[in-house]
Length: 145
Image 1 (cartoon, rainbow, N blue to C red):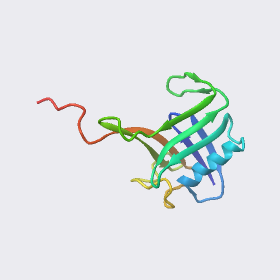
Image 2: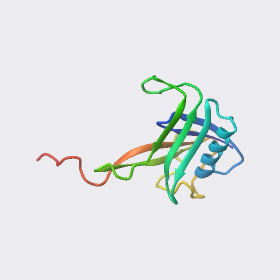
Image 3: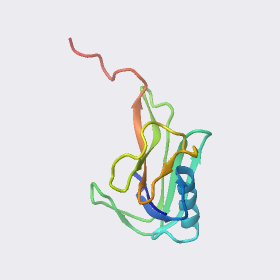
Image 4: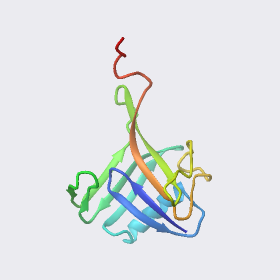
């Protein structure tokens, strides 16, 4: 079973080829093992922090340059890491993942914890992680009347 894993913001992307079914957690664990074994080009380490429900941080150690997709900036070797932030005033940052079918449509809707056995990525599909900012429920400013 082949799936793609991408972590937006830390320039991490790889393909996982293991017997399925592959859960979100098993894909993260496989990426960690593959990186440690030197089997992901340009990456020597991959890891993630978590609590019982969510991923709280993702880290990648790059050994080669990587090109940014949007700015086309060249990012050098080093440790790239992003963590969730529970309190940024009127917002917070949290890791979200998307599970996509091979054709790019969503394979899952709603939220399942990262370690839920039902959070399965289909063969040929993708798992994409993004650190997103979410308002705490209050508007940034009052609406004009």
